[in-house]
Image (cartoon, rainbow, N blue to C red; front, side):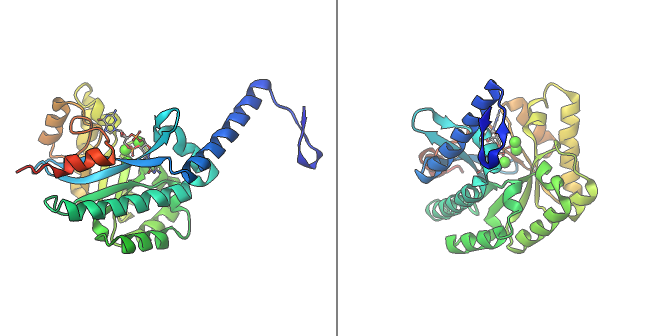
Length: 280
Ligand code: C2E
Ligand code: CA
Ligand code: CA
Ligand code: CA
């Protein structure tokens, strides 16, 4: 047994003790990493099937660990959410992505109206000051607000739909675009879909990856595309890896696509090379 504050005895099973210590270490590592500037953004193009133009770039966070190399966000976002670091980290992502996009819009004007997609977690959306902070960043960056697209997962939206409805209305008041991410995995109620001021749906990659193997996945993807058309929402398919998947999506009149087939998420320098190529 260990004695803790207020004289309470806390019993650890030996495995659990190690686990708690590990979490505590990761927690302080994460904050230090943020202060040392070890986080960076990668970008993945989103392509229109109408004309094959790159219409937007999704900003994807990476931890560039001095020993372990690049660490994927699935490994540290949950911890950043639990510890509250996500608030600062999320704003940093927003700021980086907006300033970077503005710079690229000026430098590569042949990508007319290029947008940036930014992932926002539910915890950020519950922060009362978020809307004002985002407004300030967009204003300072000089970005046209509708080239800024915020991606919110379906499960985050459905976790507290009444609160989300108010936050989304406030965000929509800034004229940013709102995307539902991982659509099809989080049990949306269609009545909310109608009430939320959203612009686009992103079909979760689990459906896209089975689209050529499973009739059910194909039908779900096509139903989401039909739903998008009925509600006047843009539909983006993520996780496109093969030309078979692409052909099915094209035949189903999906609007935008994203995935390894076109490009993996790439660092800033590679993104500049990508953007500098002019396709006629
Ligand atoms: P997400 O928003 O659903 O992002 C799509 C994930 O799929 C990305 O993983 C991307 O690299 C990956 N991906 C893209 N195309 C393909 C493909 O063709 N095949 C396969 N198998 N995967 C593909 P990543 O970059 O590891 O990000 C994982 C998740 O972490 C994201 O899922 C998002 O939920 C979260 N995330 C990333 N950046 C941020 C951020 O700045 N803030 C917050 N709150 N979450 C973030
Ligand atoms: Ca996303
Ligand atoms: Ca997604
Ligand atoms: Ca996801």
